[in-house]
Image (cartoon, rainbow, N blue to C red; front, side):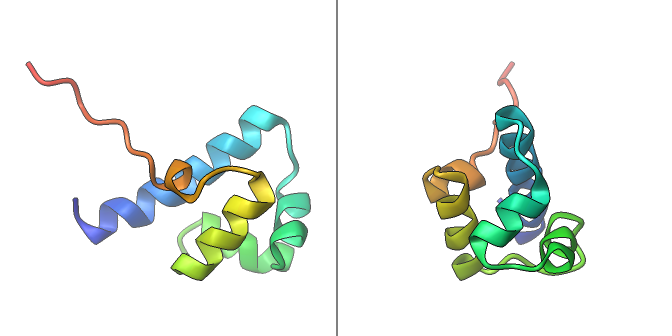
Length: 77
């Protein structure tokens, strides 16, 4: 998997978890220790999500860090 794949997958998974749980992005940002602007920049790809940031986000979402990096593999034919 390429780094670009992780950079796209991570924000998508964070957004998916936030939406599934009916949370507000600003509440997750605050709980993780980020401003709304910083968190929005991470989710929109303007700021790279470092491993320490991903850990804080996972804690705020009460999920394992691996859940943030989960990637659905395409079905093999």
